[in-house]
Length: 260
Image 1 (cartoon, rainbow, N blue to C red):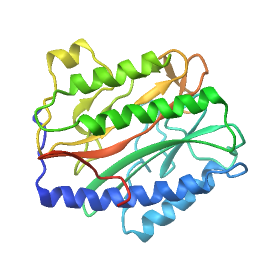
Image 2 (image 1 turned 90 degrees about the horizontal axis):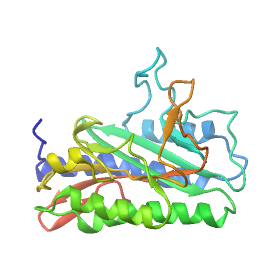
Image 3 (image 1 turned 30 degrees about the vertical axis):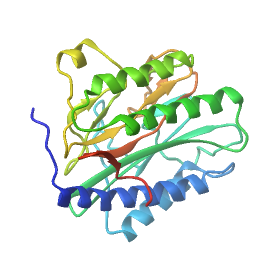
Image 4 (image 1 turned 90 degrees about the vertical axis):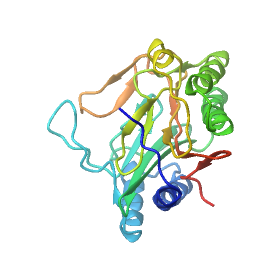
């Protein structure tokens, strides 16, 4: 499928949605403390979304495995949970946890999507290293995205950085194009595969990509729990996930989900 190239006007519309996402995630990061439930974080996100006149992209998304739409506005995933953790009053953050919050919003027909992983209270050195390496992968993408660059070159650097640190890149989930829909072409992997080399993505001005490295402390394997949503590592070791919506522009790229 052809990849949609967005005009400068559309990029500004995407940036407006991205600023809603950035504001919500910034607030949630400050509120993520020991004793706070993930439902409380979800309530904050939903109220901020309403006040911004936006729509939470994840709420009500159909489950691929059962008749159970996603109930939250955010995905809140803890420790060995990779993604799609369901917000709950029964899930209370505690000292030493790592929390991933993934959130997307649509504003005036355009979407933004981003995620962070943060330590709760004092975390172990190995968990801190996982967070730093995962963030470094996203930084590598931002540093190198520009017209004419092949995505496989960036993905190779990301994969090498993770493996050299002793971690594993998740291969079951990848980034994606984003625009007027949350998920658009192309698929944006954080690793090099035969499929990517066969059909590489050559970056062009106007491409909008949600880049989201997911890194496991142990092996790459993941599975979905019986709730139909929560994805966890098979070896029960911690996972981290960060994401930004990024526009390819004439001289490089612009992060659309960062606070200005």
